[in-house]
Length: 357
Image 1: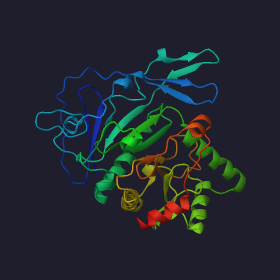
Image 2: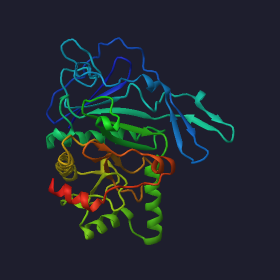
Image 3: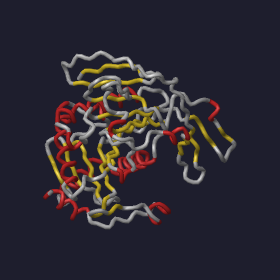
Image 4: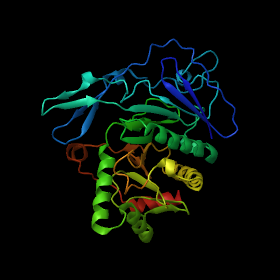
């Protein structure tokens, strides 16, 4: 992989990722932009202990532009976008409307006992999977998907070196049902200045399980799913894919490397190559369920940057709100009001449908 670093007109970093042997020089960004300036504040919810991010500048972010005004396409024909090059393979750059910012200052600090706040000192990036506006991750070649994996791993390593960052979270939102505001195939990376609740809960359960049983919780889940077999979708030498026993979402699929690694940078070449093939197969099966492409959220769960790494097992959690043709699941009273999840379908039945898709 070739890595080329540049700077956008307002001072934000951009990184091009190209397959080995590609010759590229960073292209100047000719736009007249004011220096990047944003701030966010973390407020502690005294009832739950959760950190809530307040980032009011995000209200003005770009919303569903037409294809000929897409800010993630290459800069061509006199139109300048966020990527100042006529073509690219994979690109990552600092989000212009970030939820976290290294520029957040001391004026964000509050501590009166009950109400507490601190600066949201993290970083948010956009990762463009391809320069082709009219495709999706599902349409990538295995070689291009592998390049995306390499970019995720590199960004995890680089963002994890920021002193204020506790957790690096690459993810993709696809589909208007999910709330996507840009149609170009892309994902994001949040470098959190705290350990987010889902990761914290999974890791706490894994640590408690190890203390009680002397084994890794994630590894035992893999073995239990393998023995049951009814929810396993795909298994290769390097990856196992299954629908979890207690799935929350109408469609929920988990992808684990069969050999434990803690985070994306620890994946070796064989695991990266096989993930690209397996993941594309899974996405195409999801798209075969209904007449329209399946909306989804793909979230990487990996070890935090410094603490709680001992029991971590990298995996991808893939979920969709689509529950039937033309219907989506809304998080209504029980889910939103009490966190009491109700799944209208059985994971075993959906696994059979996906195996046949």
